[in-house]
Length: 429
Length: 187
Image (cartoon, rainbow over all chains, first blue to last red):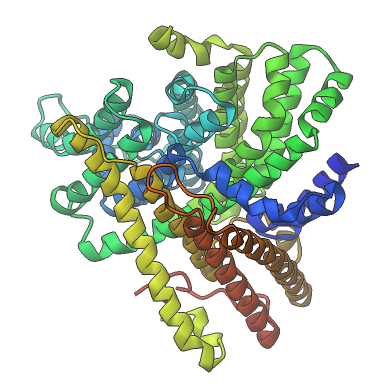
């Protein structure tokens, strides 16, 4: 009764347009009525559960992403990638994907990746006569690479909820991320095969002065992932400290090196990041309370029994889990989807022999895909604004990229565990 | 520069504008404090072989104030994430208005219940004095971060009720679509 009521209330509130934290608030009111809980314990539960230093990595990466976005730190990376492959058919689209991957590894944020790389690449793609819908769809589809290439805020959250190693969770999506980069480049190239009027750039010699200048200019931006990832994997600092350092490093680089940031725009960036942090952290707060009381009502066991009653075949169960994750992702954002699904789905997948680190990768790819899958698709709508392209023009190429790049990556990640476990096992044994 | 504040009752606009400035200041200052703290933690560890004693205890208080005031500002700016599938399917302006009215009313009821729960939390924290819960090292009362949570929810309730007020007065579901409603009060 409670599981059915929970689903109906949550879906109904979300579908009519109630904001995600308030929808979870409504769910809590329902649980209070049905479960007869002491309501004075609700908010202190949220405070207790959220009172963790590890979680501060999320706001700090959001601030770092906002500062980098305003500081135009993506520009030299994009220009460098463009110089390498701009002369090839599909080269600019490949440069877009590669730049999204590299910038994603710096900022850890899909939104920042989309705004920075999209804002810079779209005029270049249009100038070279690349189809508008495909260009915008590709920019959007590549932006969740920031969630897959470490460091990623959602992996920090997963590791914290599932009690797993953050560093292993980070590494789990590196190979799926590389597969996705390759597939996005390939599919966009195939989509372009009938386009004949592209204005391609001239091939640049490796000894060209422009290439050297742009390479040197990109060094401060390229140093950032080295500091962050080198610091984390070298055992020098924790992910939270690395996130703090990323903010402090990005400010002078944005102001004095790339000159995209002024002290005034820095304050605006901090204010904007503060609002995003408020949106994300209050969602986390509400979902943590809900998931605590769902566990209290034994919902994970009930869900497990329901899934096992349909089939005990691991392949079928993993397909069902993926389907549920896709549906969750279509209805809510990645953070609340992750927090809600992990306590319920993790015992199910562990029950069929899946490693929790492998599940981190499956979840990462799923949530990345959910970010661009309508109807919620926050990145799709943001992408439409950034690239100045109508959503309906982007829908068909986006669906093609989801079907032929994202979905195969998801299936490969789900059914070939080595793709996610190879690097964590190689480095941590 | 148009902002939602122009639609509020005049006697409310000035205090709300002041409150917004204060919240923006706290949000920005908290972000800077958080980043600088971790920077200095690393510098102290490797530069001076020292530790910043129990910094997590006061930093979490700063963080909670930032999270919940940020959320209040997000409510003002209507930045909270929603799916709004029904909104995409409806095209009739009247139906859109009724849907917006329904959503705002539901959100107001929910946030008022949450504010009541927040009141219970604060009441319980205060009544426990002098045996109230506090941090281990610095003995900072848990009331401090919980006040941040409560104030954040109260401000969210204030802005949600103002949105409902504006919606009822305008009779138009599109009344929140300002070109610059997000930054209108940020200066």
